[in-house]
Length: 152
Length: 152
DNA sequence: AGAGATGTAATTTTTCATTTTACATTCACT
DNA sequence: AGTGAATGTAAAATGAAAAATTACATCTCT
Image (tube, rainbow over all chains, first blue to last red; front, side, top):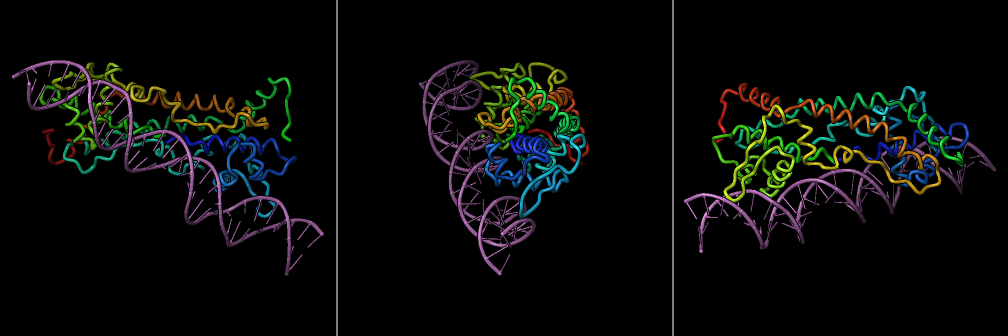
């Protein structure tokens, strides 16, 4: 199970929303165009980000905005919003519970500590990345291109 | 893509091999019983661990042994043996290359740094776990059960 | 030669993420 | 009120990757 593409789509959306602020009304169709996903996928991402308090979405007429400064939005918040069972969904253990072998009976317990370490490692890495820093990097990318195109 | 179950199967196998040392000949059929996997799955895991210099497998007559002390075998070595493309196979980016939107054109570059951080976090977490420590934890599990059963 | 293993290619099955369809709901504007 | 353009979600369809299985070649000891 991959650090699902939803996460990269979400970052894409958030950067887009930030860039569009005050200029363009950001709808699920617009972002579907930009990301190459189906509008429903975008709406589901919106829904998750909304529940997590990261964006507001106005019903009926449409439009999306960040509801806190990018410096306060971490990659971990974004990830958690989209994968509620967290990082454990990245990690699998083969099922071998009812078996006579003592290794089979205890493998789950033995792996718990290492997998917890991995989870902690991923979490702290993700917490150290803010949307702000990704936006800065995005601008740096734009700057290094000869033509810095506008979002139309 | 999950931190594939192969990894937990491999740890299972290695603990088993360690426990059986000098007592039982460890065949793919035996470990298939213990893990609940098909013998071919076990053989494939063996094959990967062998290439990585973690175990030796004797052809023809059968049997498997660790070829270095458990303190020198890290979880990262095991993982790497089984997933040659490494941790990047855990992480995905939605494909949106040929699109006009500047966010789409640069999202890959923007995510590279954060994803590298995550990879580093996972790697160092995995490097800090040795087979020895997992074997110790396994023994602790055994000790805490009233009947500490033997591998038969 | 035969029994019991491993080694591996190739196929089938299963599982799961993703996409899509469909429709109810909401809001603004006329 | 009524229409148009959105969002919100459930549910079904699609597709792709993982896992299991089959099959058979190869090896080693007795």
